[in-house]
Amino acid sequence: MLLTQLRRKVFLTLQMRKSLNNMADNNFRILVVDDETDLCEILKFNLETEGYHVETANSAEEALEMDIQSFNLLLLDVMMGGMSGFAMAKKLKGSPETQHIPIIFLTAKDTENDTVTGFNLGADDYISKPFSIREVLVRIRAVLRRTTEPADEEAHQLIRYQGLEMNLDKKTVSIDGEEIPFTKTEFEILHLLLDERGRVFSRQELIDRIWPRDVLVLNRTVDVNITRVRKKIGRFAKCIVTRLGFGYYFDA
Image (tube, rainbow, N blue to C red; front, side, top):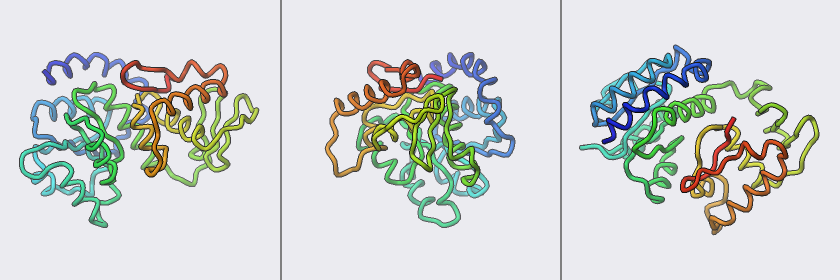
């Protein structure tokens, strides 16, 4: 079923090539670790189509025999025979030589506890199966942008979409040069959606990424803050789209 669904997404993948080509750099090396051989082949084909260098491994044990330090990103399945993806990630994050390598978990387990476990282990993202190739490409692009672009460049301190601008140093939001007052929570929501535009965030993901863990936050609280952000960004409000049953994303 998963293989059939992914094959149907190949056309969408090719449609995205023009929009993502600027991000795919021939120097980026990605390691796909999954015990589903067909899935590894599909991911390898589509990622290489985008210009990435890709290697695959069908177990954590096989992956650990490779030169992990040479990769810029790992796509890591959680549930594998032998060593699990969580166990492999813990091992990598515990080593000074590999702790800096970003990890995106791929998993059929879509529970809150599993997601929290993944992020607590240092994961940079978490993708639930079945997924579209388009979603994988967008998330890879976002993670590589966060982890590889120089932090001292002025462009990295600003996030822009047309007349909407966020200054990450000054913690300000402006529209057409006019500064708009934002609360800390509103700022963080807009930052996350705008920085990873095109990716759908569930309410629970927003809660986990933005609110302190010792604070009880209801789904309604997320909805209220999204409404406030939309109101403050005026004509760009339509860019924050509700995907019923899934969450919110910034449609650029």
